[in-house]
Image 1 (cartoon, helix red, strand yellow):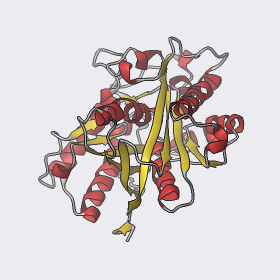
Image 2 (cartoon, one colour; image 1 turned 45 degrees about the horizontal axis):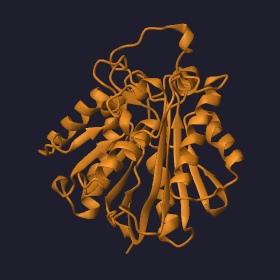
Image 3 (cartoon, helix red, strand yellow; image 1 turned 90 degrees about the horizontal axis):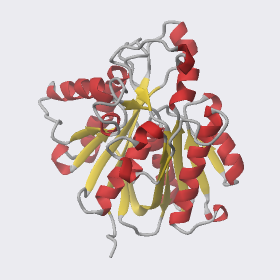
Image 4 (cartoon, one colour; image 1 turned 90 degrees about the vertical axis):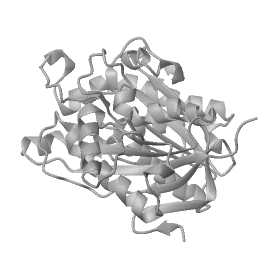
Length: 338
């Protein structure tokens, strides 16, 4: 059976990461993971005339560098699965227009990258495709303009706020053996515990991450010790505390295994409030730093659970609570490079 329990898929036919690439903005390029990115920009405009075009360039860079690494052309790719934070997925739509690859637009807020990886793996494992690109992007200034206040406004934020990562990540999934293999995906449920504060996304998303991690462990009959590392997408410092407390209530200490991309991507002295967030946050950390660690043999099995807050400015103005979701992907060491 390819289905384990109600929410988890097992990929038995072989789904592999052929290549991956990342592109980031100036603040990310100055962070502790700077050596793991393929392309960096010194300014938020990324050599473009506005921020939305800058985000398109980042996503284009990530996709084209991914293709270049595996010596592939666009015509050799069966599907492009991508999404972003902007209304109607406009960044992904316009980039797909340029790439001319059959396109499936997807949205799960900041958990979009694991959603695309889950569906991409189904296409590969089911024999419906041989080469699938999964990609996502975010940009600090475009997200601020849409969801909060324009950067020029200069409004003050609480310390619980997260800082949208400027960047993009892409990965090429294939049925050809490689050093990194995708073995499981767990599709999350929408969880809403009543948080209304859009400046405290970590607390809102932590219960969704907890639900997906515990569901994955139960349905695959594994425990924390079976993984070298368990990574969440962008809970950042506040959400990390909440997640670990939720596990403590079940008498499970996850602290020695758990890391959060929103904490990893920036240094403590960088002006990012509680840490990083955004679609690019789990994408660039996973496809850059974590994949590099796997190829070096330092990580042999990891569960990556990207988290997303499924809100909109309209819903916040109507005083709605924030529904959240988290999707999980298991990466394992495949055929090691010689």
